Image (cartoon, rainbow, N blue to C red; front, side, top):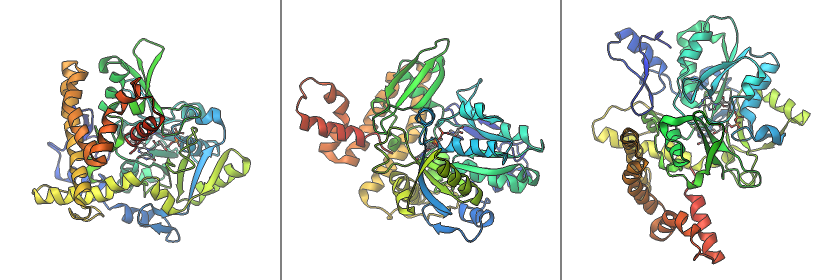
Length: 456
Ligand SMILES: Cc1cc2nc3c(=O)[nH]c(=O)nc-3n(C[C@H](O)[C@H](O)[C@H](O)COP(=O)(O)OP(=O)(O)OC[C@H]3O[C@@H](n4cnc5c(N)ncnc54)[C@H](O)[C@@H]3O)c2cc1C
């Protein structure tokens, strides 16, 4: 986008979108280096947020600048059932549209050529019809190119690196600055390649070449918000097949399967350059509510005003949170993004590899030996998942993927949980189904083990 397509973005064999600088001119490479959040010439999140937000905002090293931190949820059950979490992301962009703050919303939704892609929505039906998280690699280049110069104003929704990339883009193309007027961030653990949807779908009986549609977050009334299912639809069929996420291999975010390589170098969890950021309130008290509840951090007075008006009208429920609670809701994410990044940077530098400049300093000793081992195993797991899945897909064999990955996941779980809890976790799916395990105490231990194995 920044180079008008002279540095093309193509789909790799592993289902990731990748920029190709082969044959690009030095000036195009310089533009790309100023725009890509993982390049060395682009300003970091602290520099961007200092430029775009007033100095009066509070600052917390973990969540960035903030006006207010809250938990919130759309009040209507009919609404939230079709959202990933508390429904606040689609609600915010819907309000911006309804109140005339923007003419359109640039966000990810269902796509005719692919499962998901960036699209532009101009009415409420389109905003509401394209809800829920897309754990899928996308690019906003085409969508933003289509709206550039049309004289209308837009909100753009994205994970942290996309929002920072969009902020860099408007510096390069000032005409766009008058068009992209609201930046709506999603908290992010890491971004997945297309293979994530395909692996989960394969396990519910839909092979990759048959896959028409997926739903990563099917809610179950009266179960914990984290206890959601994955569903997939085969081409030419109307019915959906689904399974609880906790029973799907590869669904545990802690194992980082199919994570994009760039995510290994990200330290921005709360989309620090976005005007508002929304995530899941994975906190005691909220986790138990099947509807889902968002963590909401506002950095724009106008968006805070919209939230306050929604609370006053009863359209949304809002609870105050502290920055500590917001950070606690993403505890695993911080271990991966901050501690993990320090170790990965140190490892790469020791091996003579190029690394981007990050706010986190390289330091392999930042954590103890066990966490260091987990960080390294997770990185290896992630890398192997790409090649193993591409080979399995080409061979048409899901088993081939399991054969490569299961021993690695088991080793990771044993390091993480120790020999007793680790083995219980590994064998939990089989043990829980066994008619010999009738003892309620044993069942409660198994249930705890299974819950631990699905968290991020
Ligand atoms: C890759 C990824 C990783 C995430 N990791 C975490 C995490 O570790 N912890 C956490 O708390 N939350 C995480 N989230 C956010 C979480 O999944 C929910 O998206 C968020 O809580 C908003 O829920 P909601 O009910 O408010 O949104 P909804 O009301 O369901 O609306 C979602 C809105 O976001 C848009 N959207 C969905 N996916 C994308 C995408 N990939 N890019 C751009 N726009 C999109 C939709 O178009 C829609 O407008 C992640 C999201 C993504 C996409």
